[in-house]
Length: 476
Image (cartoon, rainbow, N blue to C red; front, side):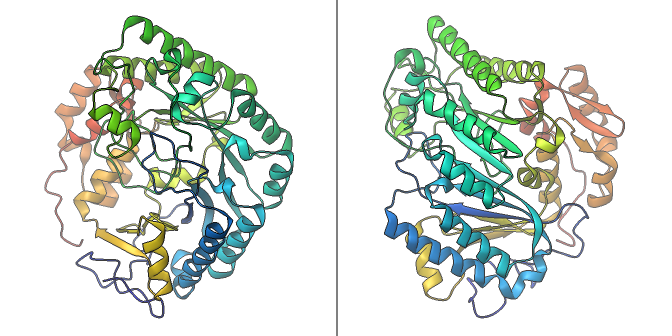
């Protein structure tokens, strides 16, 4: 059932087994950081051929109507605001949030502060495309209190940018980062994509488009070198593009991609950002790249090449002072990590608003209508624009925590896991842990299960091998 805006939520689109409002943060939630707020801005100037996120093009009128609708959705949560006390991070993701005018972003932020318990000093992040970054725009974004400006650069190589359908040039990418650093944002981040195969050397031109998008997560059961949505969740397995030989890179193409990727990392590091996100390119069904893959025009690079690129990325960035804090994310110091994204990996509750946005209250997850018009239609009819939901049982919550923790170099706190889930994971899985340790995939250290670099590369596969004992759904 999709609840009316007029009353409290009695459910979130079909989840079973609880009378608790879907927006409620359960009293039993573990202490820690406050909830986060994710705001999905779906607009892009064009759509990249690899993108499968909820994005669309739209002119000024459509964007203005969207802002009105988003303000309405924000206001709809006012009756349950106390259940989200106190939101300490706000993330503008998409799509391309920088496609909105600064005054529109300011309206959205003001509406959120008026309706929801957002801390006065909340940490705020904004995704931007290089072509939107100007001296004027960075000044306006700084005035909004943006703490982290994340640039969807993807590559500094002109041929690769064309292949990926990006609209900016390498020169624009460099200038955007320089402007952001000069404006004094506490954290300037660069997004890069690897595993493009021989695309850069081939110089293929892709379709014009957009950058990696974000939305809060559902934990993926797939291998871990796939990207994480820029706003959060583990993605499907890494699938890299190759020339038209159905998945096998020719040696010259392999070497060209390795050299291209090294140059991208070197150029990024030379600019001096505080944060980097490095994602393996993924082919999704239903995208232009997906259609090409189905015709045999694109294929997956061998797993060994994917693993080698993953290892090189981590070792090179570590040597340059960027420590990994998740499989795809690197920061110069702990204070330069994405405070909002950490909530997804720590299982901290978050509220997601806008088309396709996901929410999680510590036990229940729900998601909005993916397309703009159905999302707006439900709001216009006085309903919350929720498309579906699920209630996680004890076993599901435990497995998600295990999977998400093993995607981070700090790993899993075994005693905290035992307290939360009444499951002595180490005792139940002693032979498995010994086997994984002997294979160099993880170690049991100081009461934690800590993945090695090789283990991070297959983190979700590691998690699936663990036995959760007789953990069942009682009390779910």
